[in-house]
Picture 1 (tube, helix red, strand yellow):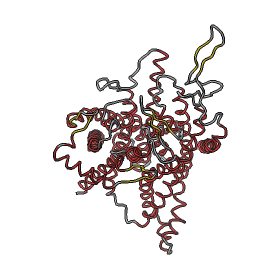
Picture 2 (tube, chains in turn purple, cyan):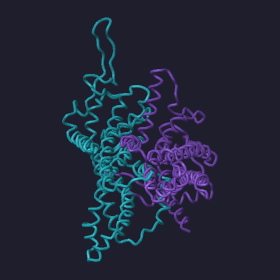
Picture 3 (spheres, one colour):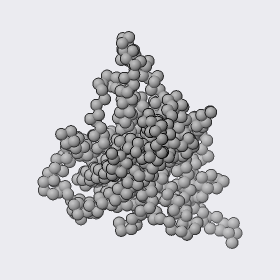
Picture 4 (tube, helix red, strand yellow):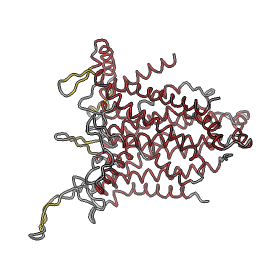
Amino acid sequence: MRIALSFVSLLTFILILAAVPLSLSVIDGNVTFSFESMVLLAKEYFVGLWNGDSFTYQEGIDRVQNMMQDIPAYFLTSLRYLLLAGILAVLIGLFISYWYSKTKQEWMKDIIGFLGTIPDFILVIVLQMGVVFIYQSTGLHVARVASRSADENAYLLPLITLTIVPTIYLIRTLSEKTYDVLAEDYILHAKAKGLKKPFIYIHHVVRNVLPFLKADLHKVIAIMMSNLFIVEYLFNIRGITAILFDGTMYQYNLTVNTLISLVIVYFLIYWSIRLLILILERVFAHD
Amino acid sequence: MTNWRLWIGIITCSLIVLLAILGPVIAPYEKDFMEPTGYYYNGPEDFGVHSSPYPPSKEHIFGTDQWGYDILTLLLYGAKYTVFVGIGVALVRIIVGGLLGMWFGLTGREGKKNSNSIFGLLGSIPAFVILYFLLIGITINSELSTLELIFLQAFIMIIIGVPGVYAAIHSKTNELKKDLYITAARALGAGRFRILWKHLLPHLKGTFLAMFVKEIIIVLTLIGQLGIFNLFFGGTILRLGGPPVYISISREWAGLIGQWRSFVYDFQWILIVPLIAFLLLLFSFYILSRGIEIRQKAILQKYPHI
């Protein structure tokens, strides 16, 4: 029931959000907001659902395309990048946070923390410039700076960006939790029993850190979604977010459908990573 | 051990604020000065055309952009928008979200967690996308004046950010509320406002300070992300007729990065200079937040057993 309720509210939110650019305008120096046009757009969308108009969009001046044919390709591209990056981020994050939680060197934390504060768009531009610089000085073509077409996607740099940002977030939060877990009495007890460090880590630390990872997962994926917009835009990847900013003409139904597919991407990623955590639990936290 | 991070943070942040205030005074050129394009003739062997963008030289320390504007001048004029909007928006977010969070944290019953799922769902649509939809109609070629637009944009940014601060402070207050000194104060007949002011606020002061600096970084990132999508703080000029050209009116730093982001392949100084300036800005706030964090941690220390 609650899930259904939040879905309905999310859908309403999307319908309202997509209508804002068309109903908010500046006329004679005053910001005006037309509620009627918002309702009208939503009504049109629902009517369109019935007769199929909501699933077509206009390309160029006079071509009408079917969204159900075109969106899946974009959708799968985004999903592929996010899945790879998400799995990498969780694994690397878990691995590094253990080691990181124990370092006494504050300067290491400074560096990782600062990497975490660098916004994704700066990371992208720096990576692109780095590749150009290497090419100009050595003639070595390390990676694609951007995708030239849908068949020639840039992979290395987008994946690096998409992985680094959530990984650093995970390292920072999980290392704190790991630190707290390491300070618990049951760890002291295990140590007093003479158990080896790797054993304690695998059987007691990891399994007690995983719940925090689960709790933090929404935040992590929210960060990744936000990254996805920047990465697809700056690397010219034909993913799901590219439809929103393609921008020849603002189309309400296209925007609504894209936002809904974004929510679906979000859930697919969320549950795939939950599955990964489940597997990790089977490995580390079985009794 | 002295907390050198805190000191470096305080010094660099004050320098940046000073620079933002004095920027227009110490700028080497007028705001709209353009280095002209022209011919030169020094002899039959030595002649040609010189045209913008000019690389960094003695006259233009950081070079000029593709139209001949001096980059250092633009940065100095734009600094005040970036710095003060970042600080201002973060400050209002903390004050509003913090007060509401503390108040409702005290009055509310045991923390209900049912808001979690809807927040999780909203995570699928990032904050800057919501801002993008709200601002796209009013930012590009806007009829509003720069100042009006800045206030409007700042207002929307505050509203977007308050719930996050509110949730964090609300849960923190819910935790603190269970502590004995609050119960004791209550038993002695202290009112809600007195508890908030005399017991909670002193306890949360450090948290507020750390959150404030972190919030500045979040706001700057948000401005930067919008800049990448050509929505500049203070307004965007869009020139059509040929490839579309987006120009930031306020010359705000993130906007400069956004408008020059395609200079990845050639004339890279045009992009590198504002990028480094923006990174330095973020770094000084970051090092300040680290300094505060370490000071906080020294007070509430825990030690691992292995």
